[in-house]
Amino acid sequence: MAAVTMVVNGNSVSAEAEGRTLLVEFLRETLHLTGTHVGCDTSQCGACVVHVSGKAVKACTMFAQEAEGAEVATIEGMAEPDGSLSRLQQAFQDHHGLQCGFCTPGMIMSAAALLRENPKPDEAEIRAYLEGNICRCTGYHNIIRAIMAASGQELPQLASQ
Amino acid sequence: MYSFDIEQPKTIADAVAALAGDEEAMALGGGQTLIPTLKARLAAPSRLISLTAIPEMHGICMDDDGRVCIGASTTHAEVAEGVRASYPALSALAGHIGDPAVRNRGTLGGSIANNDPSACYPAAALGSGATIITNARAIAADDFFTGLFETCLEEGEIITELRFSVPEAASYQKFAQPASRFALVGVFLARFSDGVRVAVTGASEGGVYRWSDAEAALNEDFSAAALEGIAASPQGMIGDIHASPEYRAHLVGVMTRRAVAAAS
Image (cartoon, rainbow over all chains, first blue to last red; front, side):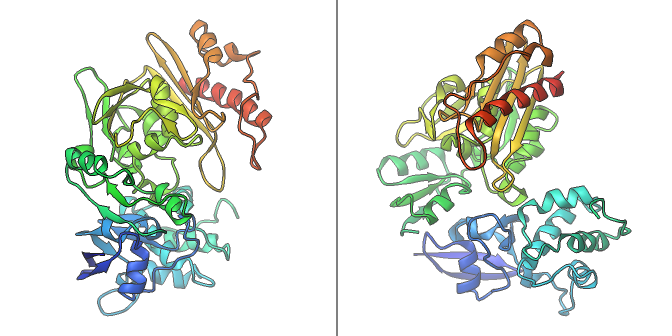
């Protein structure tokens, strides 16, 4: 066990973690931030995507101790300070970008990372960036429309529709 | 996972000392392969010595000989961005490994040291004739990859840097396995002033290799037509639920011709 200190959603936190404790386990079980989901636990589904030092990573494939001193952002930190949904979250709601909602935290975190790198992504760029986020409801079209809307773009007929 | 401790040394010397003092310790790069391996209880290290917190193992620069030098703990995303102008084929390869979140953690050195037979980077290193720098020595890529998940690294030896000679023209063509995004077959082709190198990943049971027949033909005539009549043998190719040895052998030809066309 070792003491781990990191800044999660702007709050400094410190707690004990074993070497083998994954970042996602630390977030969910130690900090009780259960918005970050574990879908596959094999680095493939993306439900556990969070930001570490500004980069989207799969929290199931990183150890908590490796986030020592880092700034971590999770879905719990995405809303506005007054509790209202962020523009991206609101767009997911407005465009029905979620069905069961299990993949949504990872989708939002990946989409937020994309929009930071590329404020006006086209459909192909969105699809490429979400390659590591799987929606078992197969609701991809509306997720893409939500991200285009959140980035202030017109909603064209998607190439695949 | 079995229980272990993690150490995060800040210098190469400290990392080497930590590994040397404990036979059961393992080096940890970005963890994108090792962590799933640990979850499957296929490894039981006493300690993981992380190599990602060592500043001298990060970053990209150009040396006096015009080689692109990349620290072993540089992530795939950083390589994709950092060599976009200096070595576009390598940038494109790095930018298509896994997915964005994997590319933000996975490291060049980790991929090279693991030598997965379907990984992309070994093809780039072998195809470029890169030099692999460790804490102890400099190793030519031709000598480095010795078999399936096997390299010539000694116990406790760590890769600190790779140096890539930049070819006149190059292309990496990957036929991705759609679920894993590893290469079902990948071909890294590089044309230097003194010859063409063709490195194939994903295909052989022996791991990454150079396709010497194609190199000889392309040295005579650098065109896709020069490869007509040359076929890779299915002998020794990987066969699994995704592709038979015959299909992989066929793809080696297809991907090589595409690489020649892209690099022409």
